[in-house]
Image 1 (tube, protein in one colour):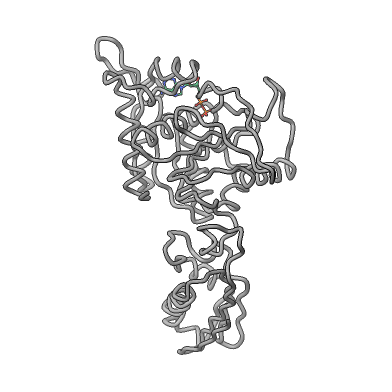
Image 2: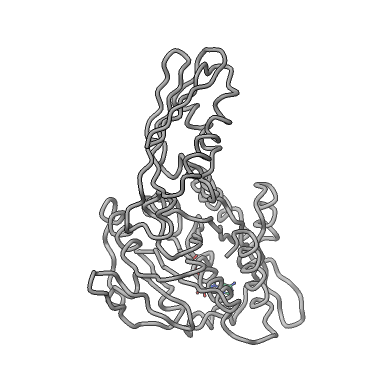
Length: 361
Ligand code: ADP
């Protein structure tokens, strides 16, 4: 099916880049992501004030191309530089494999998974895997169907934090079946590696391996899939944010400036690919002694201030807490326990609720 229409006004210099930037305001119907970052805008031509935008979309829902068409016009028509805006839509039926998300025409959503949330940090050691594991645990305790995927090729720790050393099995068509522990589906490079074997894949190989890894796991039906990204903003992180349609990202940092510098880089990476930042978690925010005195070991409120400065939600502040570390080492994240004396469990419940409120189920 092809549709083409024109509209009006005067004439002068617009560029394909400026048009592309403007089209980032057009969200894919029903999604927070825009049609540019979803890769639907295939070509933009400008000829003497006539702008032609070629869009390719896979859907069976006739209202989807109609909305994209109208919303593109709403953005381009008011431009004084554009004499005519032509929106050409190539509409195809979704490929059979695309599952629920095939309606979006996006290859890299994961069938059956409603929300994919990346947990990222600029630096290693700030507690990103700890936050990922406990957030997964808190969401699961709230009754959601949760999966947790450790995407860190070089230092996977989620398997250890859940005390799981089982090897996952594969289906007949070579899909890996996640391990299920404490009601949470887990997948981790750690499951596929011999203990302590160094992973020495780098560059394009690491990228390909990560893509394959993400696309070959049979998650089934999930409300939330938590992706524990490797620290930093390198090739693997970029591959993930560009190939998987993320619902949003959570940034974990400790309060001191050296961690914040790198956290800003992570935030800017997500911004560039239009992945919404759901908020920031300040980990190791203070240590409280038995007498109730708080010591801001890594600085006072750096994460909270940064969230305010960047106008992103502060999802929570987690103290340095000995049981958080011992429980992780014992293979049962603290947020899975029922203790009502741990302030940390409550904090993770609050963070989970904020995320649910922000993205829905
Ligand atoms: P990252 O994934 O950022 O490299 P980890 O989650 O592996 O960091 O955490 C590093 C170490 O710090 C682990 O031993 C973990 O148990 C510990 N840790 C993380 N957060 C806390 C906390 N709030 N209190 C105490 N120990 C923590």
